[in-house]
Length: 245
Image (spheres, rainbow, N blue to C red):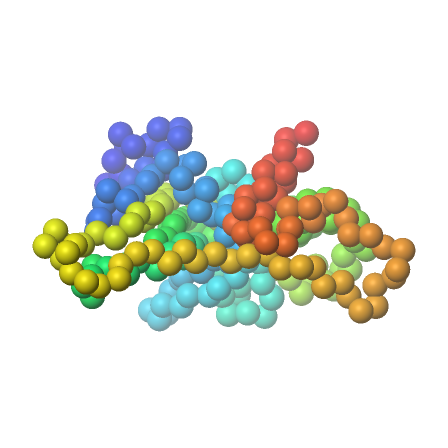
């Protein structure tokens, strides 16, 4: 049964399906917390069941409000299986640090994760599908879809787009230091946190790029040395602002 007390406009309803059971104090159910994890990620994992056999497929995702989208080849097992109304679980996770304690038991990691549940449907309407494919590009690289050559009919046919309204979601975050047993703090053992980040590198232009073609402004978020999640949050914000105009 869903706990309707948590089903405010800024929070997802909570039931046994999405309730954080272990270390529940790290759990969050408000949309802002869940969306923050989704928007800072490039890669998601989609879990589903075919004839009693569970599968989990990695793919690229993007978000529009409460709706998650992802795409893949029309020939893939996942895409062929995800008919209208297929229940799926989508997860996104980030590793932020390695936590080294004075005992093996208290070693941990700092992380951000989100788990979302809903019913997946194949986007079959041609206009919606074309818009979604443009949105996939523009969410990552603001304004880029309009700069590209038009997509060809056979390319639209080869790609399949899936949409899932997030019915329930939860986020779980650890962002803390070492937590040892009190009597262990005096032990002569190094303990601490080793931060982990994915950084954007220097762009490597195509070897056949025309010399008169400059790097577009829509790639400004991807500056060398910046963390990838910072860049993705910025492009998501730009994408949302463009759609709101």
